[in-house]
Length: 159
Image 1 (cartoon, rainbow, N blue to C red):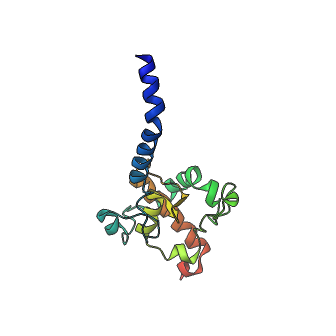
Image 2 (tube, helix red, strand yellow):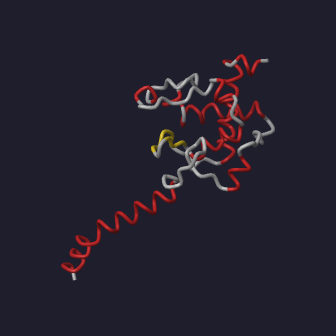
Image 3 (cartoon, rainbow, N blue to C red):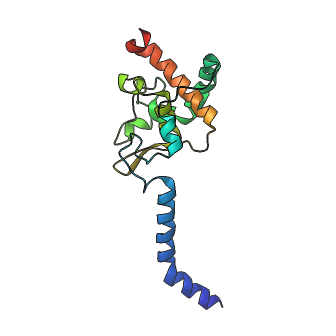
């Protein structure tokens, strides 16, 4: 019986690995590349989310809760001031976005939420990992915190 199992492992493991890789890619978004900003095909619910405003009513509390979440999840790449100059970010081939830039400030809250939640892919390569284990409220808190940095650093937001 042991010989039989070892033979099956030798003969079928490459096929099994390819099958599992294909399954993982189809469910991780790698195979769902599209023209979307995040690099993923958006579901109908995500399409509706694109123009959403931050649903948290107490923005000051959301900003306060978002700062430690940003520190734990985003600071290494995006940096303390969210300029894309974090310790890990400077070593990447594609630098992280400057979250205080006018380009990012012009994005809707929903677009920023989806980018954090789903991650980002460029040309089929993961450039920002998804925050899928975060609760939606936590992602919205990070969005609020990022917006607060934009208000400080971005003259467009201060008008």
